[in-house]
Image (cartoon, rainbow, N blue to C red; front, side, top):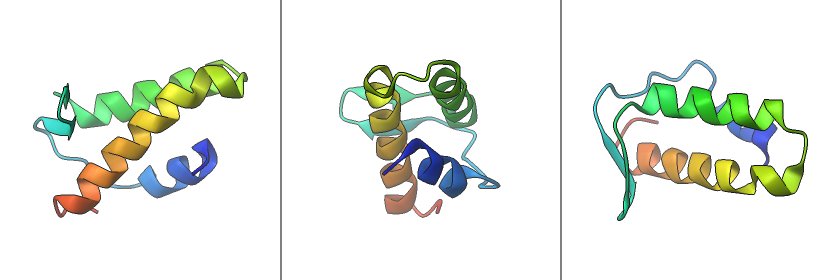
Length: 71
């Protein structure tokens, strides 16, 4: 999934206010802030290789949202 596809998927979605465990070792306290910061980082650096971790974490967030009825 590309950054643009993720941006389109997240656009206009209501994200939960509380914490999200997107991975067994990764808790996100503020999902909306998390998503915004990740997209800001991707847009601020055109290097695709440097953006891979941001995209991976956004995919984990998307998966968590879908699995927990927020999609």
